Image (tube, rainbow, N blue to C red):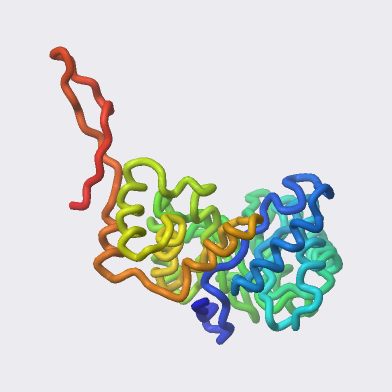
Length: 297
């Protein structure tokens, strides 16, 4: 597993981690598969995906409990744990309370604590200052944000005094590249890590015309489309990907996206691949968007 430096902290983290949304429940707790989920998290750690991303909202806190169970038996510095505070808890007192409860459920401190979503009804300065308090109290080592635009990320950074914002976690994949408009360039310029969630689009990354390009490259490297799509993401220096998986075979596949690199030519080939509409004529009529092809121009 390749490791990347986390901002200017000197911390090295795996470039492929485990997303845990849906493990232990969605917005409420699901206790029916706890042992399987704990085993899945341990499988990820054993496969080298030692960065585990969770949140207080996942499974109404139960996912954090499962993460806490899963990491028992490992040295604490062997795993890097991320959790997030929900947007309704961004007032100072609520945020501090959420952080303490997350630590209690995990059974250990957090390595990185993120604001899950911005909340325009709460002053951002209050939230960021409270995040720094969480770090000062030893509940987390680092702080960051999630789902912040570049503009909002810049504003959040202006309110820090002692602790840097080291991460912005956003949706990013080879087929959803909105982050490239402003967030990725901002992170590159300011040495901030970009953690990409939903990086394989729920396993559908190899489908459709753009999937043809991914599969072509996958065949060349004897890799799967999922592995190529993840490697394309981590080719970007600031990017860390956190695919969600619970089946052992999927975890092993995700971990296999590291320890190798696309060539610059293949990276550019995939980067330029895009959907375009074309027109076809049938019986003298023009049918718009009746076919799709790929352009690499």
